[in-house]
Image (cartoon, rainbow, N blue to C red; front, side):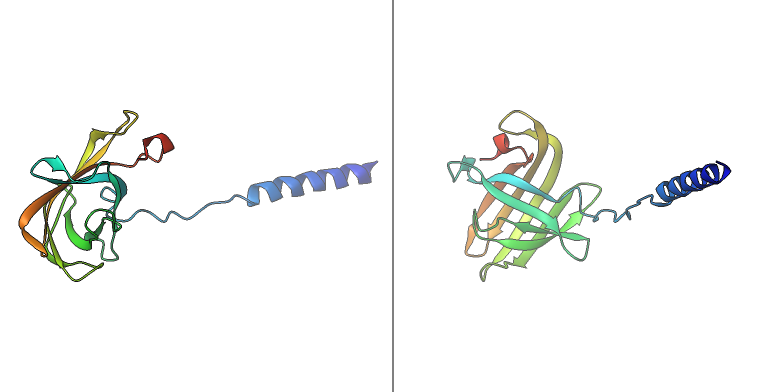
Length: 160
């Protein structure tokens, strides 16, 4: 009987040690420095205050490897452009001048680019971030376009 008690105690100790030593901790990978700028957006292209498309198109902003700039990418949905833009963390602004387009051979200038936290609303009425910028394309240098939109919420009901 004494032998069974010792074996039972030893097994209990082993189980407790085994459970406590298997604590899983994941490393903290952190975030990129552009987390406040990086998102998917539902945007439209405007000229003279009028939207050029019937409904918003999907647009994206995301980090570059440098961390002091973002990619501004219409994913070939509005004007077919993708350029790097410098960011200002404090003001949540971004801009670029005569940046080389990655989709075809033109230059793109972005001014007044800004992220406006919780300034937009999704289709279903959820408060979401908003994006705004003025854009000039070298293949239409006399026209200044505006791009305006709201952040994608990730909810299917809010997708266009």
